[in-house]
Length: 150
Image 1 (cartoon, rainbow, N blue to C red):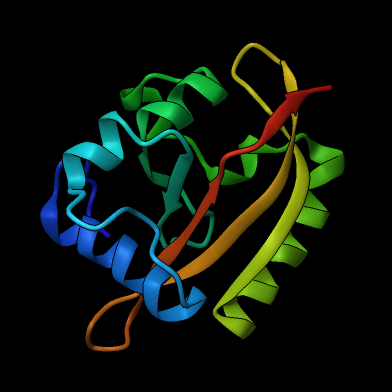
Image 2 (image 1 turned 90 degrees about the vertical axis):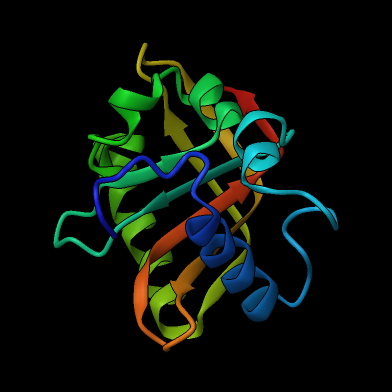
């Protein structure tokens, strides 16, 4: 995926939601929702990273930005591995490998860290492959709506 601004990008919205709908078997967003709704108003976190050897975030909706305490311009330069502390990165890598094998993982749980160092536990997350209409892997994405500070 390019380094372009994907906040309101209709094609990226279609990639995010279409991949989720196909792989997970349920809709990510309500009928009629668009890229603006997902970025500005969705009450759940959505983040995505690219396929680089050290994947970098390319998308984070406003709920994700509030949760992780990064502004858009900071988020989209951040290697996604830095969303977890070093001791939790091995577990995170195992989840991402399972997603690569199976297309998605549902019920994800883990501890993440915000910019300020605040730790929070995710429960009930879904991580999925971003597969375009030609079957090409464009990255991975995650969503969760439940987290608590730890």
